[in-house]
Image (tube, rainbow, N blue to C red):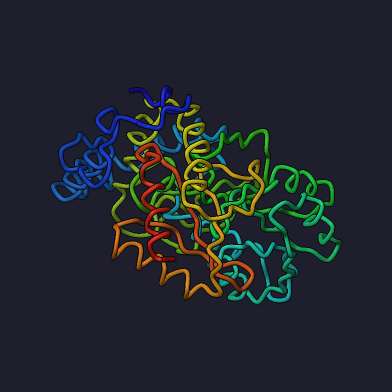
Length: 361
C-alpha cells in the first residue's frame, strides 16, 4: 500500500513499502544512515582531503539544496548543529543585558535558559491553546528589543500563528526570531514569503536527517558562537567552520531530502496530521488544543500534576509495553504528547490506549 492510500483513511501503511516498523530496521535499506556512514568512512580514511579540499564545495551544495527546500536565499542560510544553537547564536549577537524580549509561555526551556544567560528582561505572555496572534502582539511595545515565537511548540505541539506574529512585528519595527525547531518537513516553509529577521529549524526531526543537522536563516547577519579560521570573512565563512568536527550529518542532508521527497511531502504531512488526530482519539485521553492547531503532534491531558509525573508515566509505558510517548510540561502541569511519522500506524496508538487503560485499572 502506498503512503497516499494510507492518507485516504486506510490506516495500514505497509512497513515494507518505505520504512520497517516496530524495531526491525536492520533488514531494510537505510539510505540516509548509509550515506552518513559513507561520509564518515571518507573522513577517517582521508580527513585532510575531505575537510580541506572537499568540504567547502560540498557544504555549499548542501546549503543550496536546503535553501531550495525552504524557499530561502542561500546567502542568508548556514548550517548549525541544532535549533538550540541557532537561537543562542542570534541571542548572543542581538540581546544585551536588560533588553526586553517578548515570548509566550510555550517557549522552549533551552530558549528561556539562553535568555536568562544573556541577562534579558523577559516578558512571558500567557498564550492559550486557541489564542490568536494579537494576544502576543499586544505585549510588543516600543520597549521590546526582540520577539521570539515558535512555529510549532515542542512542549504542547501547538501550531502557532507565527506568520501573523512576524508580520505584526515588522509593522511595529521590532525584530522577530522564529524558533522553528519542528517546522522543516512538518510544515511547508517559504522563507522568502515569510521574510523573518531570523529563523532556525532542525533537519533531524521531520526531515529525518542525521542528528546535529539544522539551519539558521538570518536576514541580518549574526556571528557564530565559536570563532575559528573563517572569522572576519563573512556570515557563511565564519559559520561553516568552527574547528575540526564530523560534518557527516550535514553532508547527508541531501539524501534525507531525497528520501522523504520520494514519499511525497504532501502525502507525508497529510498522513501525519490525520494519524496524529486519530491516534489521539485512540489513546482515550482528551486533546485540549483545537484540531486546526494540530499538525502531526497532539497534546494529551492525562490529568498529571507535574512534569515528574509525566516522565514517570512515560517511562512506565516504555518499561511495561514498549510504547514511547512524549512527556512535557506546561503551566506547571505534566502532559503527554503523541507524534505521527510515516513509520507509525494506528495500532501504535491503540497499544498506547490499551496500556493506559490497564494502568488506570
